[in-house]
Image (cartoon, rainbow, N blue to C red; front, side, top):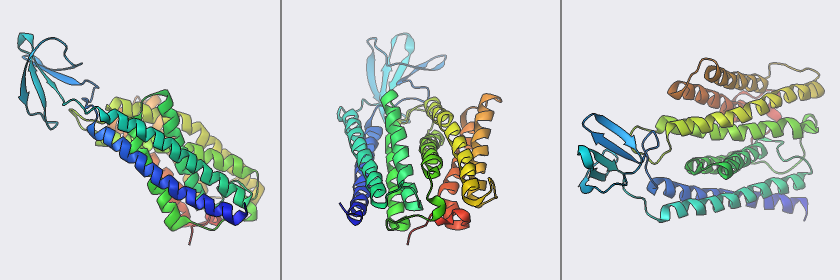
Length: 335
């Protein structure tokens, strides 16, 4: 295939990826909307006694059952021995978990087309396919979905699926509509093996940071009582694990960027806006890890710190190129 044909195929694969990610998002959303509800401690029922409220697993003893309304939008109150009442959410429909499994399959298909779009773009331009903002955003969306799907192989984090998929689909749509540039060579400063080192590390770290950011947003959305979102502890754990993995990779990316800058411009550090915001992002995530490890911050406070760091990351990835320019403005914003 010619370079033009490969570039056209890459664009078509990006559009196919958007559709597959959106279809996957719908499947995850259906499972989340109709799946099993839990309390904020993970319990699936609440026992009301004369001494107060106890959250526990579903009761298995024989009980007399009466229908009641609950704060979660309908449930069952069951009179147990000793005057206790067990309040349980409605049982989810049997198709809800199947919708989640279909969503995973669609997510992997979208992952494959996303990878194919990067490979064909790279073959079309005969270089690493993240030499401009369009290619960079496509690569970050791929990294975010990869981080989610790989994590899902190790533990059940399907509750993140709808949000990661819609974020990636919107990111790809933004890239196609506003950032797209025709396939072609890059400026001499980017024509270096450092693009495979520095930018690849930044892409991988950014994908993990996105998973952490989505978890943090869900943490703030999650209310007390029955909810189909996971517990706040689970959301905080997923975010922390993603940041622990991504922070050293981002650190390496910043160092590699300084080495590349010395090779390209003859200095390691020049206070270019991109360099400054990459360092600000590093400081913000370092503050998160420090506050959690040494000061023992947990819960809402540490989640807010994490989301401030995530906002710095997003501005560094997109906002700097659009609003501030600088030496990194060669990473074109499309026409």
